[in-house]
Amino acid sequence: MSGILVVLEVRAGKLGAINWEALAAGQKLARLTGGAVTAAVLGAATEAAGAEIAAKGAARVVRVEHNLLERYTSDGFTAALKQLIDKEQPAYVVFPHTYQVRDFAPALATRCGQVLIGDVIAIGDGPVFTRQLMQGKLSGDYKHAGGGTCFVSVQAGAFRAGEAGAVAGSVEAFVPELDAAQIRTKPGEPFRESKQTVDLGSAPLIVSVGRGIKEADNLPLVEALASALGAEMAASRPICDAGWLPMERQVGSSGQTVAPKLYLAVGISGAIQHLVGIKGSQCVVAINKDPEAPIFEVADYGIVGDLFEVVPALTEAVKAAKG
Amino acid sequence: MKVIVAIKQVPERDAQVRVDAAGKWIEESGFQWSMNESDAYALEEALQLKEKNGGEVVVLSAGPERVGSTIREALAKGADRGIQVESDGLGDWDALGVAKLLAEAARSENADLVLTGLQSDDLGYGQTGVIVAELLGLPHASLILHVEKTDAGLTVKRELEEGWFQSIELPMPAALTIQSGGNKLRYATLMGIKKAKTKEVRKTTPAELGVTAPAVVTLNQIAQPKKQKTTQMLSGGPKEAAAALVEKLKTEARVL
Ligand SMILES: Cc1cc2nc3c(=O)[nH]c(=O)nc-3n(C[C@H](O)[C@H](O)[C@H](O)COP(=O)(O)OP(=O)(O)OC[C@H]3O[C@@H](n4cnc5c(N)ncnc54)[C@H](O)[C@@H]3O)c2cc1C
Ligand SMILES: Nc1ncnc2c1ncn2[C@@H]1O[C@H](COP(=O)(O)O)[C@@H](O)[C@H]1O
Image (cartoon, rainbow over all chains, first blue to last red; front, side, top):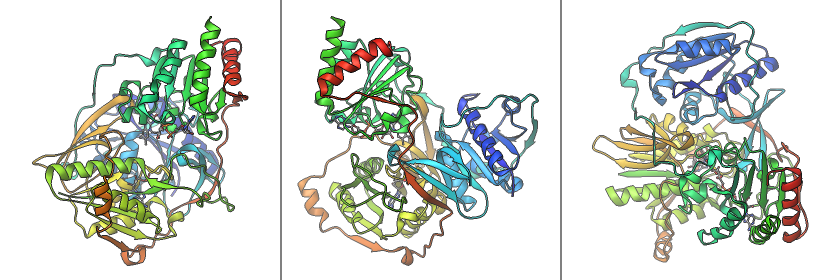
C-alpha cells in the first residue's frame, strides 16, 4: 500500500480550479508521507482531460474510461473507482470536496471499509487532517487510525494550486468492468430554475443579510442601508430558504459567487458554504452580535453589536457622509 | 409508503461553544438542543409524502437520553412513531459507526424510503445518509429538494453547485439526503403535541443492534480556528462604531 491517488472531476466539460487544489493537497501528502502522486479522471472520453492534468504537474495520470461513465452516477463512479483502488492499493485517496464527491465518496470509502475525512482545510505532520466543526466555530484535528487506504476530500480554496511541472506526466488508460444493470439511478441534464434578473456577480457594493435579522418584517432595516449605499441586497441561504428574498440573491456554494469592492454582512455567521461565495471581495465588513462568529475570521472590519442598533446608525452615518 | 427519517439532535444555533478541558469536545452543559436543520426539512418531506401517498413516518435518532425530546418534537409535527438508539458514548464514534447504528435500526423496518438530512450542524460530516444507503444496499441520491413518487419509483430534484439543479429517477426502496429549503416547515399544533405523548418510541442500544464500531477515523483535538485576516474591530456604541466604519471605508479601504 503506497502512493497517493488524486481523483479529479470534469464538470460541464471542464476541469475547475478546485482540481488543482486537490492535486496540491495530494502533493503535500506526498511530501509528508513519501509516495508518488497519481491523478485519475473518469468519463467516457477522457483523453483531453488526461492530457491537461498531465501538463498541470501530475507525474502519472490514469484515465478511467467506460461508456457507462459518460454521465456521473454514484453507482458507476463507485464501482469503477473501487476497481482502480483495488488494483493500485494507494495509501491515500484525495478528492476535491464537490457536490459530486459528497454524493459518492462516502459510499466508496464504506465499500473499502474506510471513512472519508471530508472537507479538509489543512494537512499537517502525522498526517493530521484539519476540518471545521460547529459550522466553522471550531476546528478539529482528525487522524486515520485503522490500516488500509485513507480517504480525504479537500475544501475549495484551502490549498494553493501549484505551478505546472516542466515536463508533462505519463498518461495511461484503465477500463473498469461495468454493467448497465449495476447503475440504479437515472440522472437528468442539469437545468436552471429561472432567469436571473439581478447580476450580483458584477455588483460593486453588496449588503448581505443573514438569519440574525430574525423575521421577514425586519428586512426593510437592512434594505434602507443598502439603498443609502447604493448597494445590491444579497442574503445567506436560510433567508432564501424561507422565501424572504428570492433565491437569485443567495450568495454561496449553492448560490451566487460575488466579487464586490465592499461586501457588508449583517447577521451572517460565516459558514464555509457562504464564505466560498465571497472570496473575491475586496473588503469584507461584518456586523454580528457574537464576537466569535466565524465571519470575523475573514472580515477586514468588524462591529460586534446588535444589528438592530448598529444598522440604523450605519445608515445614518452613510447618509451624513454622502451629504 | 413507509418512510424512515433519521434525525439528529444538535446544539442550538446561537449556542456559545466552548472547548472542554480535555480539548476533545465541547462543553455540553448549559445549552439548549434542537433538531438539525436539514433533518427538519427531511421530516417535512416525509410528512408530505405520507399526506399524498399514505403510509407511515418513523423517526430514528441515536444519542443519549436527551435526544428523546427531539423525537417527541418530530412526533408532535406528525411522525407516527420513533426509534431511539440510546448511547451516551457516541462522541468518539466516526460517521461509519453512527451510520451502522442507524442502518441496523432501520434494516428490520424494511422501509420504502430512508431520509436523512444532508449534513449535521455540529460535526458536519455530510456523509451519514450516503453511508447508510451503502450499508443497506440501497440506491441513493444526495442534496435533494423535492421528492415525487412515480409508478416506477421516485423522481427527485437534486441541487447542484451555483444555482443548477438536476432531476434523478431511482427505484424504491431508496435512501435520500435532504437539503434545506425545498419545503416550508410546519409548526407543531397543540393537538399534535398532545398526541405525541401517547405515540410509541422504541428504545434500543448499540449492543442490541450488534454494532461495536472501532473508529477508523479519530478526532484528536479541537480548537478555536485560526484567523485568516486581521480584522479591525470598531468599538464604542453603535453611533461611534458606525461613524468610524464609514470613515475607514472612505479613507482607508477606499471602497465608498
Ligand atoms: C451543501 C450546502 C450548501 C450550502 N449552500 C449555502 C449557500 O450557498 N449560501 C449560504 O449562505 N449558506 C449555504 N449553506 C448553509 C450554511 O451552511 C449555513 O447554514 C448558512 O450560511 C447560515 O446562514 P446565516 O449565517 O444567515 O445563519 P446562522 O448561522 O444562524 O447565523 C446567524 C448569525 O446572526 C448573528 N445574530 C443573531 N442575532 C443578531 C443580532 N441581533 N445582531 C447581530 N447579529 C446577530 C448570530 O450571532 C449568528 O452569527 C449550505 C449548506 C450546505 C450543507
Ligand atoms: N446520531 C444521529 N442520529 C440520527 N440521525 C443522525 C445522527 N447522526 C447523523 N444523522 C443523520 O445524518 C445526517 C448527516 O449527518 P452528518 O453525516 O454528521 O453530517 C444528519 O442530518 C441526520 O439526518
